[in-house]
Amino acid sequence: MVIADENITRKARKVTLAKGESGLGFNIVGGEDGEGIFISYILVGGAADTCGKLRRGDQICSVNGIDLQYATHEEAAGVLKGAGQTVAMVLKYRPEEYNRFEAKGHDPGKKMLYTTADSFQTSEKHPLYVRALFDYDPSKDSGLPGRGLAFQFGDILHVINVSDDEWWQACIIHPNDEDFIGIIPSKNRVERSERARLKTVKFQGKHQYNGKLKMEKKKKNFSLSRKFPFMRSKDNVINDGEGLLEDPVLSYEAVTQQEISYTRPVIILGFLKDRINENLVCEHPDRFGNCVPHTTRPKRAYEVDGCDYYFVTSREQMEQDIENHLFTEAGQYNDHLYGTSSRAVRDVAESGKHCVLDVSGNAIRRLQMANLHPIVIFIKPKSVKAVLEMNKRMSKDKASKVYDAAIRLEHEFAQFFTGIIQGDSLEEIYSRVKRMIVEQSASIIWVPTKEKLCKTL
Image (cartoon, rainbow, N blue to C red):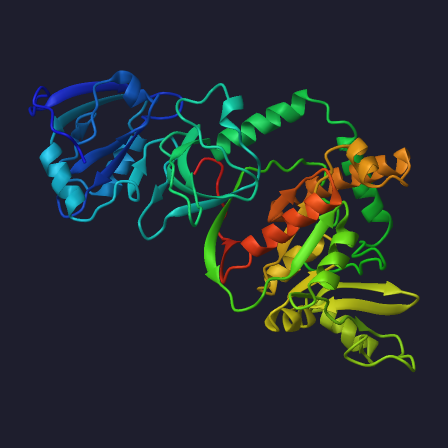
């Protein structure tokens, strides 16, 4: 609430504000039922704050001669957006009216105009939630205009203020923690800084990785798993090498909550995935299981249909099902088709168990398309030395290849990771994996929205 200051005149006053690099630096509310347009928030370090002549509770009467006393919210937004670099405003300090405005149930933190060059409006009906796709330590960011908010890859952030093109205000969504609102770098700032870094810092082998990936995918079919090569799919979900030379720059992903009635599949990617997959199923058979794969090869005498495999008698039918996106993965081995169907994964998920999948990163999108949102955990080795320490029998050359493969995997699929885990031992990593699975096993989960989060909002 605004505290009335008797020393500030209630008469109309003129203020000229020079727009900064990141905009005007204040938010507005109002414009409904002729109630007026009010300043609801002033960003610390922004143009309005630096000017020192604006105040929360100010009513904006006019901008550059345009009367806004009875303007709608949209009309005021348009005028401010097109006001140019120098904005001449007539203001009246009306804390009492603004207090009554808030008392009617309006929440200035949830409905505001962001007066940057590229404006974005959010409302109580459409709050903005994003998933962080990078770690952020504000103590290492010298450009912060105020108290920063530290977060890690995978954290869900409620973004409540994007009034500045460079800095946003947000809080981390924690079920049991008290909300703390802090400053985070905007999507635009993160991506611009990262692209600048990639131009100046030589990432050993990065371009070779991308080039190698592209060449390999032209020479052979995709690899869906350790055992079988991918069948090339005609769908548009798979990136078949085109565009790989352009480095993706990750920042934030818009997300929304969704209620689910199944137990989420689990995909472990990266270093130690085979051992962790085996441990999960063997140690906790009541909570984790594997799905039954399909194959076109003949059934052997000791095998049971529906237990060892689903034996498909028609190769043409299985090929058609693959083309119709009914398989998460499919491949060919010794002239026979093998595959994991989305239906088989769902059967395990609906039984109350996590379906543990040994698949590639490409399968994640197919599972999401089937409305089976997996928990995807990437095990990232700290260094080649760390790989050697956890596997004493491995050669240095092999350890280097394992580390490089992990870097390539992160480079290509990081946007699909639920979380990234590191540790100094298998036991530590395994414990963190189990804890993350528990944390991600609620009946209401965060999933990507279909709407794209633009660079500047």
